[in-house]
Image 1: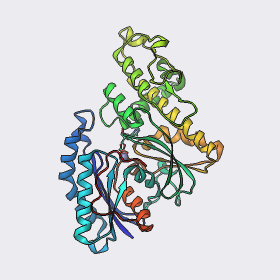
Image 2: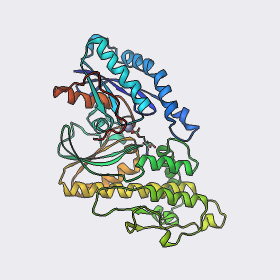
Image 3: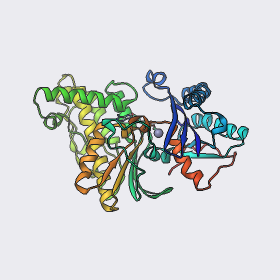
Image 4: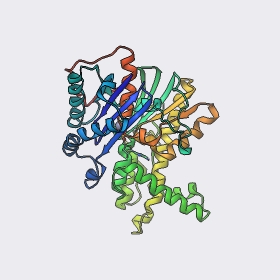
Length: 383
Ligand code: KG4
Ligand code: ZN
């Protein structure tokens, strides 16, 4: 079954032709990163206008790259939520219109579910060295999936296709959102995740060259971790606030001033502002490294706990933050002693793309699912 997948939930416009939910004939993504970079984040009104101008050329390129004709296509799928209403409307309307015009079945796809299905995608060529943890065959149920993107941080137990149990989610900022906001605080640009990863890597490489232990160096900026014990929920706003205080050069915070939004849940906090308080320069790379470690710490430990409690043999990573090398490596180390396999898609399938829409759609279509043309966008859609 050949599915045309369309993605337009935020600031990426994607079209892909996917065979049997796994095999890529083409996967085209037009990114608006440069447009939004100057604002330090996505501007919804600008995003929807950009979607409008990109969607037709992206579709044409997807067909050209796949060498396909309309006659080859069996079904059309588009994201209908969650996301920005204006952006979603563009892809969904185009998808439904094409399905109507071509008399093809149409299915709307949940963007979060699609991120999970990025783990089903295959490429013809061998996975690169860095992607060796990419699943060889289809992932096996039951599994735990950590979905971490710009708007979501969710731990999900997946018992079978379409059977999701939400174990926990963020109570405030999503992991990607924290990366983006902290990158802005540190003056590292948008999107924040890759910028922070890069700055952290440079600082860590420099320390290694000087034979200085990284763990020791990071102690200059010990940061809070909201463990929210007894739950699989996350909270990253306290960490973001700590970074803001550091950057503003605030003086040492008293313990009672710890700001996490969840009193008593922070096991470690430190605000070591000596450098900035004394007017010295902050080490941005080292700060980025400490921040990244704080996020990765919580995500990895909670995912390991969920894998243990639900006795799964496989953990999947999904969403833009799944592109983070430190998170991938840490999860692998955390789960290796339990003999739990950690898999994640290649980076281009972690961030928003239409191939994952085509994959998720295939499994719905195979089960006989279709949507009527009155399907509307659902910006707040959950799993
Ligand atoms: O899944 P995605 O492309 O869009 C949403 O559905 O939100 O995720 C985008 C998010 C951004 O917050 C971006 O900073 C983050 O993913 N991201 C990363 C990395 N690459 C992208 N975060 C950490 N490390 C990365 N390498
Ligand atoms: Zn996404």
